[in-house]
Image (cartoon, rainbow, N blue to C red; front, side, top):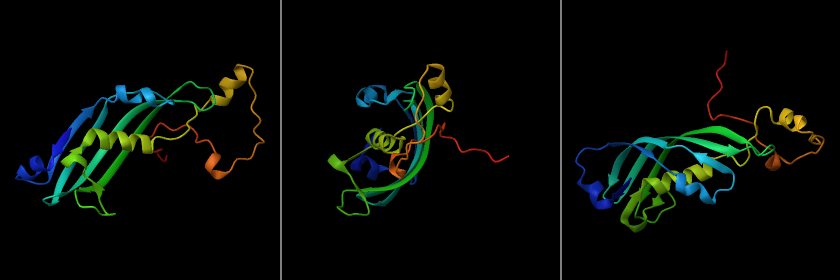
Length: 161
């Protein structure tokens, strides 16, 4: 989904609502730890600030299959995130710059997926799988905070019971 500034300026009623399902299957070919991606649901609104500045408030749900850092097996991960971003042709640290006079939602969403996806995920039973295969890891190794492996999460908030 793309909007030129001219198209956005023709819209009479803001906020302008949008909803789309975007297929990024071709994009993951060069991402080594991303095994698969299902269509990504994006819903949101565009607000007009001025003739060259627009605010996008949107919600993204990206079902990913990532590679387990320990077993290399598939891990389902649902990336759910809300965004509130301002785009403009004005050069400012407060805005994302609009390139080529167009806001390209596909490019924006793909960039956010790459930024937000975890660097490492592991299956909840990764150690048991490795043990069944005769592989024992030395857990005595101390890692710095930036080196620690993130543990499995399906991207959903845990419910408190």
